[in-house]
Image (tube, rainbow, N blue to C red; front, side):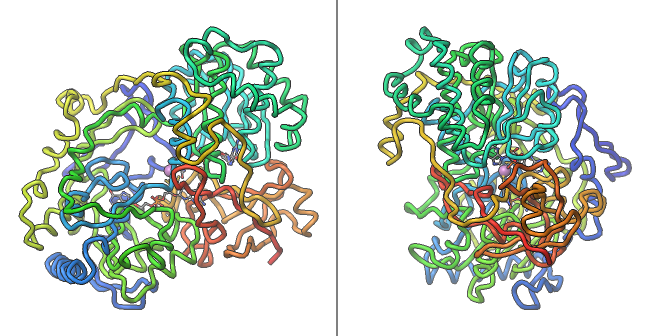
Length: 635
Ligand SMILES: Nc1nc2c(c(=O)[nH]1)N[C@H]1C(S)=C(S)[C@@H](COP(=O)(O)OP(=O)(O)OC[C@H]3O[C@@H](n4cnc5c(=O)[nH]c(N)nc54)[C@H](O)[C@@H]3O)O[C@H]1N2
Ligand SMILES: Nc1nc2c(c(=O)[nH]1)N[C@H]1C(S)=C(S)[C@@H](COP(=O)(O)OP(=O)(O)OC[C@H]3O[C@@H](n4cnc5c(=O)[nH]c(N)nc54)[C@H](O)[C@@H]3O)O[C@H]1N2
Ligand SMILES: [Mo]
């Protein structure tokens, strides 16, 4: 950042960073506009209108903290601490200020508040990978530069993580996109396969079938580094290319040709990310994919293996940061993806106080109308810590103004590479904005809590989190590479006893999509212009993103009498939203595509999330955003 007279005037990427190499994305390039936006929430506010209406009056921090302290005291006395739900989102991936429940957890622990399970993003795939690999940490993405064949499987890095693309380009590898949608990334690949959504595990089993038929498996790797191959062979035998063609909707020849290419190309790497696990069988899909490099032995070759997320490589001292030892007794866990369930029908005491921290559940959760119903409960006391008046803020009883990354101290583990990041505050916050940590230090004081750990400074918290790391170097350079952990961790398990004990098939399998509806499968993946719902109010990005659109194949459009550019309603029995039809062969027949991240209040009152079911995926209680059947009708 360039700061002049205490004001941030410039923001650019760090040229010395080995992954970002000085580049920012379309969204973060506009971060300073957001910091300085006239719409930024700068003062605490109290609701004056109905819930959902979004009318507030400015109050002082003293009044805000006083009211929150009094309400919490009363709720704890009457219903117990578990009636409080600290609901964290992914708005900040900082360990100190955000990240899915770390910040403020100490405070909530002393009150005995319910735990929050961050299930919305990547959990199904991570649990699936752990069954196969014993870890969710995969290949170092910098190793893609050494790959000869790269399968970009259910991932659109040119939109959702463009820094990784450089290594893929450097490799000169043959690239194959496997995605029901011809994305920006698929356009740039040598080949594109468009399977029916939710059928990836079947495709992976079919590819392994081809490899085994050619006798191209790596017998030495299998014997030395894996378990359960004999059992797994029987499962693979069931997935002939003909059967897989029927399940995936891909031509048999394409499946066979790709299997043959994998069989003869070392190292082959798979870049998967979260897209394919937003399905009923999403955890099983990742678990099955991770077996492919186990058959070929690619896991043992630099430039081979599978990359999903790097979070498993960051061994930070979370217990010391979170301090679960401060809980007075064991407490229940509430799932992030099931907020309407939690608010309307919780097991145990009713949720009476909700803190929304760096999250926008009305915009980003499944079951938008259910989320609204839950938040509209008159007897629910809702506090939202935010930068902007989001669709969720409209339901707050008290809104607290939060600092942005330019204004607070934080430590981040990169989402998709191997570097820790130090986030130094560069400018003073505007108005009366406070960091999450300072908000909870002040609230603890106001409630008369005496636990000393509640008053640790941000620097202390960073030191505790980073015990064993070179904090001085991290602070001086701004980033620090962590040592990769071995993958697989121990032997690769084709047969998983742990999966069996958890009630799953002990072998990798194909779990079909679960939405029982008819109609088109609607995928709502990352928008090029928004980061989830963050930046969804940036005027320039809104302008560039155009209208809320839904892409339909010409055959599906014709069958519905829909022309390119026509206004349509997208609907199912859960809800509906309005869009403009884009008729294009970018999607395969039977599939429709839109993007996530729009604000309901700017889009006719509802977004795609109004059509998505609040249903768990197979592993870990993940969300099933892309397992969504809809109908599209002209408006
Ligand atoms: N620009 C931008 N970047 C982002 C985000 C954003 O909102 N905007 N969000 C960030 C976050 S929080 C995350 S978790 C990541 C998510 O980014 P990704 O992991 O890339 O996930 P998605 O965008 O959900 O989907 C990626 C691709 O998977 C495809 N897909 C959907 N279903 C299937 C399927 O069944 N099989 C296959 N093979 N493909 C399928 C979609 O068409 C899409 O092109 O991106 C991060 N980066
Ligand atoms: N249809 C559909 N929906 C999806 C997905 C999908 O693929 N399709 N993907 C899902 C995924 S991967 C994710 S991760 C979730 C994300 O869902 P959420 O976690 O709810 O993320 P956002 O919608 O970006 O909202 C985050 C909010 O945090 C605020 N914020 C940012 N930084 C800070 C901070 O430091 N302090 C405070 N107090 N607030 C801050 C931002 O202003 C923003 O309003 O969405 C999910 N929703
Ligand atoms: Mo995410």
